[in-house]
Length: 68
Image (cartoon, rainbow, N blue to C red):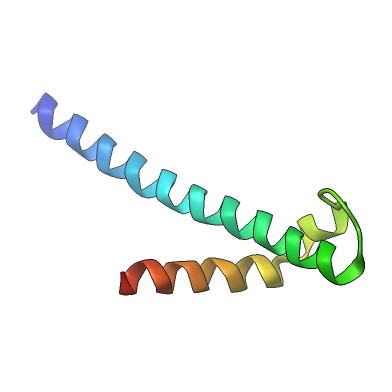
């Protein structure tokens, strides 16, 4: 019983950490793209609220990982 509970927690943590890593990668990639296009440096506040690029890179990364 307890091993079943621990296994469920491990699976849940694995899924959430996987999505967190992909979202983090997508956020960093979208910031790098924005900085290259506008010749700015660092993480900008307006990129935090523009989810379009983050979702674009998120779904692209998910598709690539699904294919691999």
